[in-house]
Image (cartoon, rainbow, N blue to C red):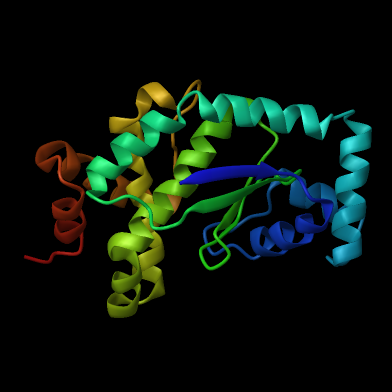
Length: 213
């Protein structure tokens, strides 16, 4: 598995569009508010113009920042994959996943394209990368089947809530932050945390959460 980091201005529209319409967020983020304070409509051109202006106004060296994020990730990458492979008892099937830097403060992902976004916050970058990769592990082991059997909402809620496990088995790799999740998943995350602490088995935890035998 190889995680490839990049910044492409023309990818900003994709992340803005998906993040603006995220089912997990009921309110606008700070960056979304900033965007619509300037632009009345999200288009590819307006997303790119906003990103260009944001980078210039904040004097961000995207190449240098991307290198910092990449180096920081490489310091924990091997150990993350080792533990995650053991927990899910399977490595990810992909040979490569692409990670794109974004000026947005929310990060979307796409399983079919094998790509996700990471924001500018260097302190939280490793957490974001682990969070997204954890979705990949869930999806390619049992998540896709769960979605087909139980529907998208249960799939999505479980996918997001399961990242609480990062705070248990990966706390030393998260850096200066933890995986907080979304307010609407707080009770589910607590259930998963307690069940996983008891079973130390991700599949038993998932089945109990779904109330399967």
